[in-house]
Image (cartoon, rainbow, N blue to C red; front, side, top):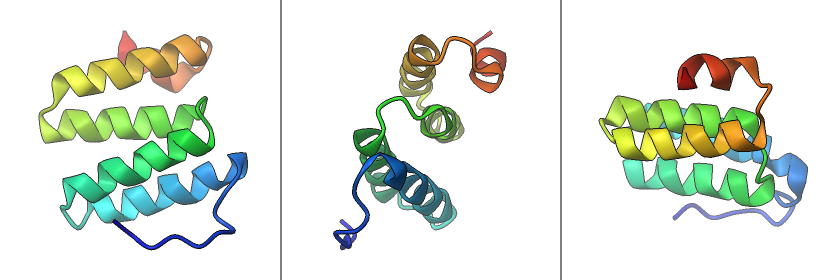
Length: 89
């Protein structure tokens, strides 16, 4: 797994994990991408951006059950988020 700097901690670090996962998604290492998204949710368990991006990533990978679970959880935590609502419905 990637080496992590200590200043990448706290609730706001979810944006760094999210961006890093997006960049790694283009490289094709699914394990690393999932690890980075997971770290983003550990930093901020309510991050609607991370749930949406990770769910869409899983859908692209053909992991429809994982995608549904992530999007459902994101919707439960962010019921008024229009982007998640659009994908869930």
